[in-house]
Image 1 (cartoon, rainbow, N blue to C red):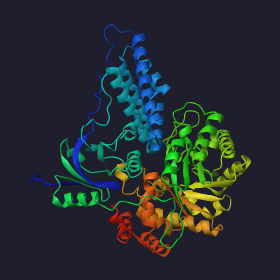
Image 2: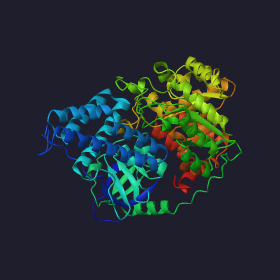
Image 3: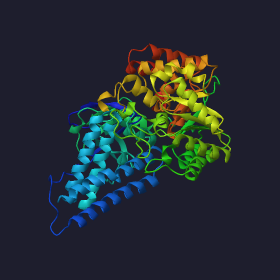
Image 4: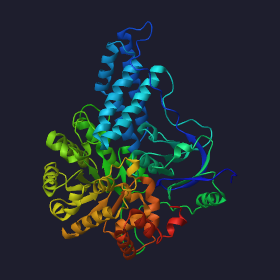
Length: 564
């Protein structure tokens, strides 16, 4: 295809697709103002303070407006970023610097830098939030300067977007009509960049090495299946991209997840709002396997009212009358801090007071949420199941189940996200009705690898045999407790090959973003239960994630047929 030197860059494929396109890099970051730059000529402390406040409010309003137009993961990300933009402590710190005679740009820059440095030092989830602070800083300074905020480049023609990583506000506004594929040098398989790319159906590679060498105008081949970027692709890559473009189209999901032998595996949707739920129902989802109730709480400085919660949950229940809706209670903490509920000064928030644990430090919020869920359920016809995140012990499961019963809700379950819960699944299920495996967190806790770090992407892979053994242990525990239901609602369920393995490990239901329903259903229909169990054993015996994936994919020819 080109006489120029062919160069290859390896990364982690996180969203399937094979395309050739022209590179556009994310624009340069906003340059830092001079340290301690004085007030502009003619300005006063009061006028500069007002200008800072106005810029901060404008950026928060812009992010909230974008959140209102988004859905699901994108909406949650934008709401959280908008909350950070209007953070009172950040504005207060910057205002103090203005009062000492520093201009608004320098004051905001210095104040945000201090916050980001503190968050980075905490590590884990909070280190990821440091990037959000710096993104907000750049947007506010751009507003103060009257220049465009950093973001996705404009282009008349579709392009391959190359970046170090994308800020949440950027990933949430990716336009799949313009962006052919996404390549980042940072980020991991469960980073917000990867999750948004999958939800949009964009071929994507994260943790790609040496991509700083790629410049605007480069022609590249991007393979989101094998995690490969090729600059100046040859006819071999061109032919592969053409083959992918001409792949057999997936049949539309008919609303019935089933194996070749008739074994039923209901395919559910992960949703975050009533709008999401309507779209998932239209796509044929058999119910909701994960309702993220954070959508009702994020972007707020105080707990939403009972009436607000009832209306929000009811909008989801209405879309799935007579069908199962699994509601996850508030999963606050770590990368989803809430000012009225969580402690941002925790030394290690990923291992701190998050999810169900917040009920010990802020009792009442959970009980009020369950009451609202119960009233919403009573007003609609959905079959409502309720589960708690971040459960570690049978005692916690028992206490949560009691709260659920007190709220007059019929079915209580818990999330399996930490190894202790997987290993104690039988004892846990003696105290509740079902479990749902959150593979994103289960992977990072099993492998002790922050899911946001590109440098740990190889470890943070749900194909890791250790993670699969945790899932197998959970299924065995469920059988020991009377064959109680086991679902998977993490990103692993959206991988068609891994979905086969999960079913073979004994998982009963799979929940995913609506875009994954058709590919998962199509591949499941090509195997019977015995074959799925055989492939699961292959994966369990593997020595690495790469080996497990390769062994299983080699036995599933339908993946190539459909370009998966």
